[in-house]
Length: 58
Image (cartoon, rainbow, N blue to C red):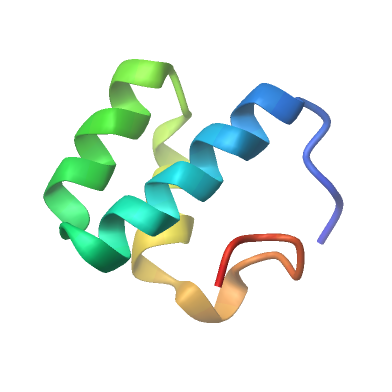
């Protein structure tokens, strides 16, 4: 997988990962949608943890 070209999206996705781990997927999904993260990225991050990037928060 390639690195995200948008560092703002990268920060938002990492925040979403943290929120999903501590508060659940619903708040994480909502936050990322409001921030403008594309649905396919939200789905990958929340529902396919084996596909997280090595640079993602873990």
